[in-house]
Length: 376
Image (cartoon, rainbow, N blue to C red; front, top):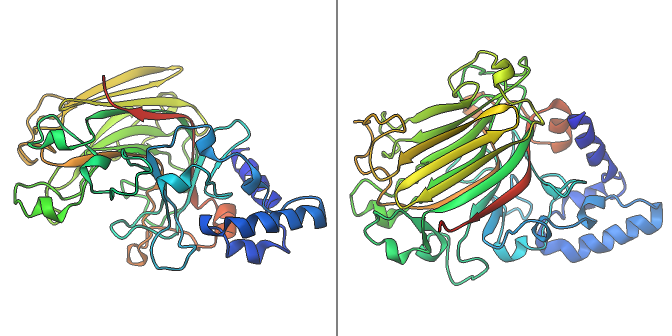
């Protein structure tokens, strides 16, 4: 039913006469012409081919004043992934990838095969925290845009110490086809992150920071033949990219961690089933809470300024000071884990959204709640 609803929505705003023009105009800079075309479609046919573009922008329902958006496309043809700034986001929506549904819930959709950011093999429709908001005076690496741990040697330069991210959501769809189902990330989507900054200036200090690693990635993963999926979170050791010890340490919430392939059954979370997470970084410690009706609430704690895991065991392979020297930011949305690199051979998808939608080659995540802020 979820896939049928999405397909019906897709067909409702894809009138054949307007489709070629519409495909070339899906960018915020082209909004005036899109509005004009929408009016023409209504007057000529009684139904707009771009009905979704006439709805309420998500920022009118969710507080998105400290977020920018990355999209899985290059609509302006500049060979770079499209990003929507904080200011633009306040009136922006995309009829396929980023919109409000009929319940005013925020929908993120990401095809398997799509345009990606330079440092990633995976497409995303994802929000990136920007703590300075719409102030264009600060770039994404500026201290005013990011948070730090209390142990950071220059913590007082940053917008805040730690912070929180709350989300209530459901995953409606994950990629169903891959040639490499044994890969840990197969059939999964990342729905929330803490990302450390990739920063040449920090790397130059030679303290082992600035690599741009991820102290937190929250996943949902479901195999096509399973009734339910698993929710788990990963911590990435804070090491340089080429270090063979730079791996993700995975922790199961409901069902399996990312290496498990058994059917989680009643312990898992079904597609379309709502659950909640809260990420709170206070001083140096990351506190995680996961809750869902009918499932046990799970909590975890990990100090991000040392190399002790949530089980209290020292990880000798990790940086001894964790992420203490990094600046960080939250991310949330649909970060599809289907690898798009041609040489990987892992990702099935054509890159044509109409076809990929019909084949199930995409991820879809729906948020009914999403908010963030400083920790009291």
